Image (cartoon, rainbow, N blue to C red; front, side, top):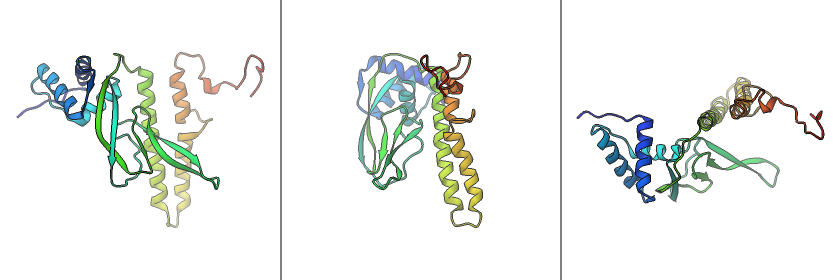
Length: 221
C-alpha cells in the first residue's frame, strides 16, 4: 500500500485545526488519531507517527504539553529532549566542596526535565494555546541551542575516548576548541555571540560587541 509523509507545514496546520476544536486532549494516542484523521481528509495516503505529531505540536506552539512521569531505568541525561526534539540545557550547582556539578537538564522549549531520579515521560496531555507562529528568530536560536547540545556531547565523548591513551593532550586541544565555541564571550563565532547576533538582526552593530557603558558612565568598559 502506498503512503505519503506529510511535510512539516501540513502537519502543523492539521495539529492547529485539531487543537482549535479541542481545549484539552488527554493522551498522545488521542491526539495522533485526531491528527491522522485530519490529514487523511486532505490526502488518504498521508501517514505519520504519534511521536512526530507530538514534536510538531509542541515545537510549533500549537499545543502546550503537560507531562506525567513514571519510574524508569537510570539512563544518561539526554542532550536532546525526547518529548519535543529541542535542546536540553544543563542546570549546574555548586557542592559544599566548591565544585560545580550538573544536577539536571531542562528542555529549552517544553516542560521536560531530567535529573538524578530515574524517570521518563509516561503520559502526555495537550492543552490548546492561543494561535501564533514561532518567529524565525526563535527557530534559528533553537537550532543553535541544539547544536550546542550536540557539541557538549561531543566534548564529553572525546574526553572519554582518549582517557588512558598516550596522547590525551590532543583530546584536550579538541575539547578546548569545542569549549570556545560553546562558551567564549569574545569569539564572534561562539554560540552565545551567534545567538546575540540573531537577536540583534537589524541593529547596526551586535550588542555583544559594544562596551559595557551607560549614560552615566559612557566610557566604562
